[in-house]
Image (cartoon, rainbow over all chains, first blue to last red; front, top):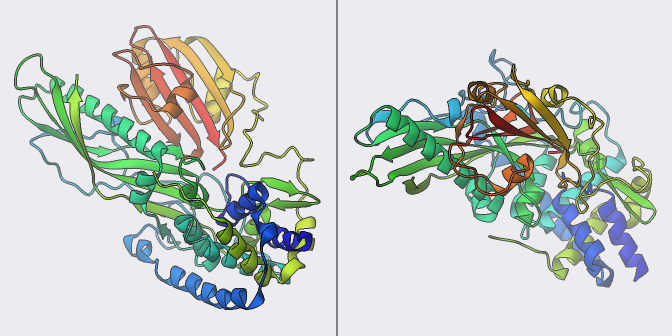
Length: 324
Length: 177
């Protein structure tokens, strides 16, 4: 039993970084350390051997199937003179207070792009600047297997890890609707921002002497929200902290009778950005062993995996209410 | 809210896959040779970290400068609080308060990429924690908030009270990710 446990620990420890930038395999490790269920397993070779082949194919499919952001222009290009910093995305400046100039009526031209975005850090270091070792290749294989094994439990965490391991470095689309459904932190932030935007719209419509509906375009600055493990384990391990903004419009309507409240309707999309990398600098000691984010960060530096920018846009979110 | 947990079978499958992929114990030496940690004091995702800031004695100007902001001209009574017992994702955090005339306070919200002010009708739990305030903002309060465009690791939240001159609360957090 101890040997089996040791094998599991060694295998996971070899590839896992535990910390804010923790992967699906990190989750597995925490489950193992927390519940000890790994020690009761019987390891049988043939199952894993066949699964490994399939998992690699899964990873390849995953990588090939996600090139849409290049076509959308989010991926930085060295040839473009207006290129944002590496891993950054282009965009349009946010409006003051998040609200653009209002117009009478219930519509404004759409198509607002979120503001330019810059990654918060430089990541693990230069890509493919070092030569990979046999150990690095073993780390890659183990990480792929673990990510595939956990894809049913934390699909987005596994998906992002596989994209990292897929080594394309391409911008990768995220399911923001799923994020909104799963994360109360993100939902609360979006809802609060919508209320404040509606209040600002009413303020400006009043100042403009509006006697009918008035609509304002919305493009807010990037703000941060951190999705904790308790909030959504899937998105915690997939991204953790993200930048979000809202684009769209808010329509405000004066009351029919004096003294009644104004009403508002917001029609927005939630956009997110994050840089997927392994530079957390965290480590965890398990018995005599120490595991670090460094082991996965190294895969980027030796060219076996590649950091990428995570982007996403939700479906249209509608909300309405009264502004006192 | 969807919250997924792995069952024992999943963990077993992971162990199997990992073990086979790595050749059983083939990686244990790697792990043993990995970067040494900080003698067991390294924070993990499970344990909130204490503030590791060395800026506790810094001036309000210096702390604001960390996050791309400047104390408005004419501001008085500026104070800095260095937060401790931080959430796992926050590397360092400060609360700065100062008093300034309302126009300068609103100008502060338009500076440093903060994005401009809007009515503070609603605050999130994270914002109230960052600011160190309680309850619903008083009517007439203004808010602005954004990541520092030049370094999004810094999240800045500003609450302006209704008065004139007014008290300005600034919450600054540097996130690990």
